[in-house]
Length: 277
Ligand SMILES: Cc1cc2nc3c(=O)[nH]c(=O)nc-3n(C[C@H](O)[C@H](O)[C@H](O)COP(=O)(O)OP(=O)(O)OC[C@H]3O[C@@H](n4cnc5c(N)ncnc54)[C@H](O)[C@@H]3O)c2cc1C
Image (cartoon, rainbow, N blue to C red; front, side, top):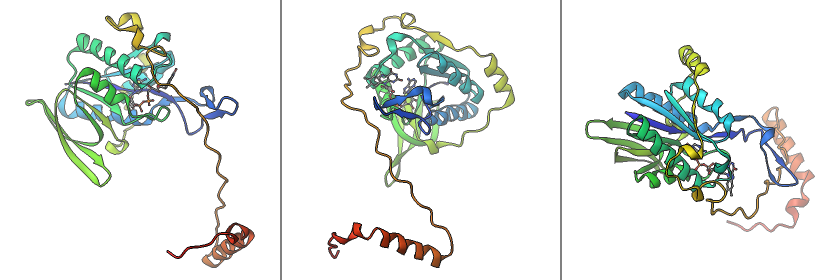
């Protein structure tokens, strides 16, 4: 079984700062990490390999430092890693990103053997669109299974997979033929610590790096900013909310403090007519 996981290196949005003048992310203010949803995608591939055997390849599109994320994937249990990196990929929206990744997947398939399963995260924490997985599936003409929270069964003989797909009111069981693409939820597994032999392997691992010129038959008009029809109208940071006060103490003390706070701000409530519900 040949599984390819797509992973993206992203800035840690928990600590990233915004440039107040341009209202854009100051990417240098936060360390680059593997997109958290993609950690679950890699872990799921490792679990599938442990159960059914096979090979795990990992693919990323990004600048050269994304190599560190690919090495992390080897620590987790991936076999081969590929980085497509070239200035001509820069400025890509989700359409151009999924096109470039699909072309790289075709090359991996022709060099390493037919792909049975492509796994992506549900979304990234920076772009946050959740469009790239289905975009790849459309371009490879394979079924996309999104919001996957559990793999129920893989029937390699009949080339079928069944999964639990998250819904607001529970989950649905969806069956698909292989090959297909899974976009996985964060709760699908609990990522494990990397074993020492994998860490040693990762330290020596060199990802395969491809430029645009390495991807034969690629249409360069569909890449990067040129190939991105998305126009960003305006970007702004949400206003900062005021810090909350944590009230501690006995129930009587907490109630007394809440009453004080309401009385201090009573003008906020005075002009408001309360309608009976
Ligand atoms: C006009 C424009 C210019 C942009 N310029 C840049 C830029 O220069 N640099 C930049 O970083 N972003 C840029 N972006 C953002 C870029 O469009 C998105 O980050 C990218 O297309 C992926 O979309 P997403 O982050 O929403 O991924 P999602 O669709 O939320 O990701 C879902 C899953 O797809 C996979 N995936 C997504 N992206 C990658 C990737 N790169 N490699 C491997 N797997 C991936 C992962 O498994 C991920 O969990 C730009 C966007 C626009 C609109």
